[in-house]
Length: 190
Length: 408
Image (cartoon, rainbow over all chains, first blue to last red; front, side, top):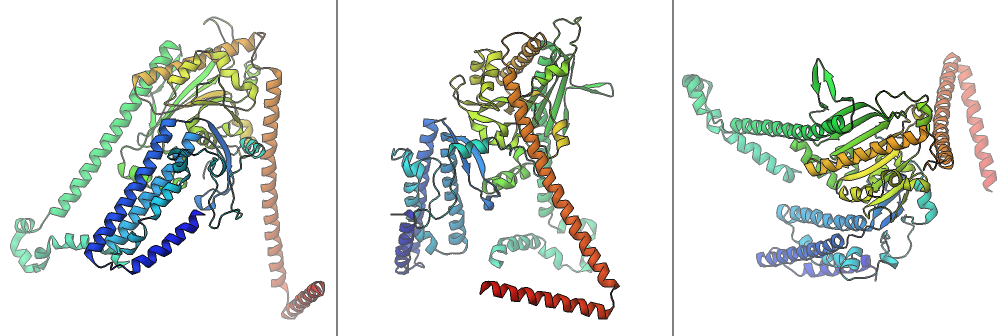
């Protein structure tokens, strides 16, 4: 099943469960905190293990693809990415690890400063689930082959599965060769 | 919002409370205390803390500048001595007001440069180094934090690096008394191509920041150590460096893989030219060695070896071209392809220029037309204006009717 759908289902179940808990009770708050910290620690450990595996394998095979435009990231045109499997994997896993820290900061603010416990409870399952479903973890922890859905560069997951018209990275020879000789480098920002 | 600002308000209240009793004193009571009394009654804790922070910042700034200068002294001291003694350059470094300077520094000891000239085959060697602003740790931390979440907002040249640019002069002389070659321009014209050896860890970054690399094809090859790829404008040029530097150059590349970013023989500029004039002026055959910051004796010795090998390549190549030696790696076919690529790139630039010119001309024309209409309206009487408005209205209605007919 599509991970996004299962995430949604887990969220709805957790919402129902949280309604049955007294979030003002210090004992419940204590256990929710333990559950959240454990979930974060497990997630972090999974990603770090996958990261260590990537560094250990040190796969320096060259990977060339044309990344789609990303206006939100300040990239208005398609861009050629020339990297190695190792660097691509590290970039992916580092971005996942960074998202743990962002989540921690957000939850810290919401729980310690704003005194909400609900978001903490909601975030006890999904980070671990996301970590286990992460493409890099699938390849480096579960030893799956980097083919099909796990072929690099990874496809952007869509909400309801299948093609949604979202731009994908181009890997065909023609697009890559055209981007290679485009002469788009050395453009200095004014 | 008030909840977010609460810690700030608390901090301000704490600072104000330090002298709560002092502020409660009336003017008369303060006068009675005298200067000494007022000094002792006032709590100087906050002021002392601020002075302490300022002293700390000054010390950090001083330490940062000293550290950068120490690194620069090491890098340029070693390389200048090497260029002067081992590679026999006639002039190394700078001199101003009768004082010799091994390098010049700019922007609070973050940019450093040195220069060497006066040697057979080589016009100049320019060594540049960029070091981080160690004198300003607060800015550094802010930059790092910003780069973590918004990488596109941070300038690309914040990293520390060293770049060595070796420019050939097309004149090879075997001895100091030997005569100069008649036509160095012709020799240099045969050095107009791009071939590079790029470290795999910086491939995209190198292509993004160097125009000449963004025109090349990336190719892996067994003749190179695993950490490197070729980036050449034509696959035939891939073997250029190893052909002239020898097979043992591979070992040197392997030893340098931790810090060497790329070695590129090129004639095109680093910055993309936007006009045909810039295209013409920015072309200069040279070799660029780009590397991350190194300060250890071992790494600097490897860099010296790299520079020495590149200079040797230019020596051999210049001599080969001047003497028309048979079996040269740079064939007419390779040069023809290189010329063709440059023509295509120039035509792309000219096309963009013409498009921009057309857009500017169109904007100007539209502006003139607006001005003309405005002037015409100002000259008309009220009756004529009404008549014109009526005509415009009729025209709009007629168009509307036609559109409706079309839809039906």
